Amino acid sequence: MTNPSTTHSLLVVAATRMELACHPGFADAVAVADAPFALWNAGTTEFVECGPGPALAGAGLAWALGRRLPAKVLGIGIAGAFPGSGLAVGTAAWVSQECFGDLGAWDGETWIDFPELSLPGLPAGNRFPLVLPDGAAGVPAVTVSAVTGSVEGAARLRGRCGCDLESMEGAAWALVCRRFGIGLSQARGVSNPVGPRDRSAWKIAEALGALRQLLGA
Image (cartoon, rainbow, N blue to C red):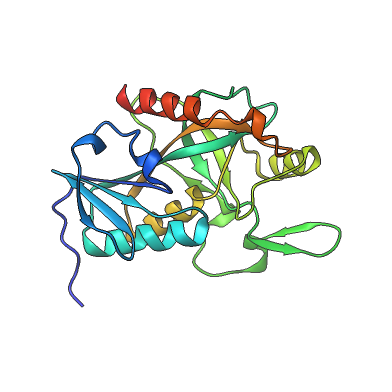
């Protein structure tokens, strides 16, 4: 098996095309593949649409990195903000670290995180440090397979993981980048509060706009 080439400086990954479109370079991107994942090229930048959730996030990014290794990876998308995080719906933030929120075991009384289960190939403490742009501050995030749907669930997850944002892809991207030896940066627009599933409180357009502004800056 030959090693992938390294002619691209940046790979941008997102769950959906509407999130990829928040990156200023996507407007000039040309489609180069549509299976098994959609891929676009814009000079020295490539864009891959992985789909939602940790499994698709990891598979899509690994597929793209197997084709061509970039100098760095940027993950972008929308996310929920936990109560008490200080992050308002319709704003955007860089992510400083990621963790898996539902990879472990439940014994009926307490949660057993995966480092305690001695699973191989994962970082100590279930923490993935991310790369921040020069001078930028970041917030911690958690990745889940099923988004949180209650006040109690949000409080438990934030208390256990110490996170401000919840998404379904970030830690999977971080794990793949770790395996490939490439740095990951991540930016998220806040579309909703984490907790009860109140669609009237979702502000997806505002979150995408804030993400677009953050990436443009």
